[in-house]
Image (cartoon, rainbow, N blue to C red; front, side, top):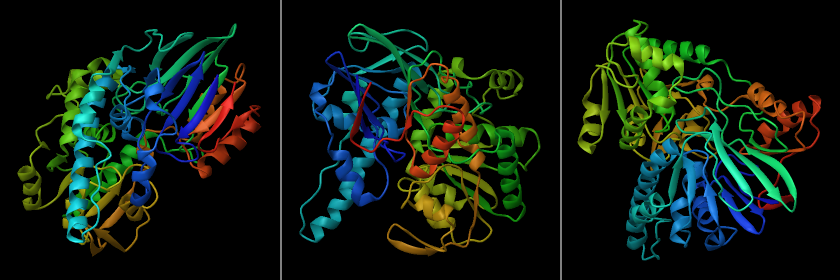
Length: 465
């Protein structure tokens, strides 16, 4: 077997790992690279393999940095199966259609400027039509159900605890008379996260392909993050301000809503309006409601006792779909919480809310996830005093609060535990989906734990096993 590391190698986004097994080609993930805008278009436009030669794709979860280039893959001729959990296939459909819309809108906006300058126009990376082609390829499967994506490969999904439907991919491979197990972690979640079950640790694993996003730090526990979140909201409300939260539409938004529901019901914060202003987040929340079987026991207990009988719905919460409803939020006076996409504050309605609130010192901008370099979210997390939104400079007077403990990614301690679960049998570990600052400390810790064969591959290199 040969593993080609074509994405999320020495970086966090754009996951793509191509496996050659028994003369067949199996792609794990097909994500969008996200970062400096002038780089991303070209990087996402060119695959380092022929899409028409792929036999199958397996998707660990629906986040765009793992799934977002599937429509382009289909556009270039791939029409084979895309295996995922049922919830991931469900989420993937709406997320990729939304992504196609964004690509179309971005191209249209840019082409207006290019046309005025008499320069050549650009095409979107892909469209909603291309995204609709992907929906026909999804094969949604339950956790733990075995399937054969290519000859000699028995695959199954196990809980990753990262977002709804997220999974690690277990591949039991027979090749040239040899049997071995490759365990691909996808994105590893954490214990005791709201809504989700805990991740399953590797078992009887010969080769481990795992993420290392936060290999350099140990997260505060979710309860501490909950308390910090509550404190920021409370202080902002006390001074009469609004809390503006750029949040990923899938996963993070639902966790925040669940936390706010608990805080308001428990009397921990005043009864203030909460707005979720993202059509994608609204649609994703509908899918959360459609898959209650994936909720953890704590959430199920909460639902049994809650007067609203809904983890992600309560009387002060408004989900907005239309542009007019989004604009109406600007007219709301007094304290409120506004959660809007995108999570890195690069596109979408969050830009309008930041523009309207960033210069008011009563307000707080809350950063609740990792921010890629060169994004507006990273500039806000770095507390830059001046930022540009829609081409116009703004002075940041709003407070910035970062709540790192809300991450849905495993921290260093959980990553160590994950790898050490395979220690007795594992021959090699390959670290992906992380920058060097995350990988190097983790490699040192794993070496100290007696796991010497740990690699951090460069992009577009390969390993034969």
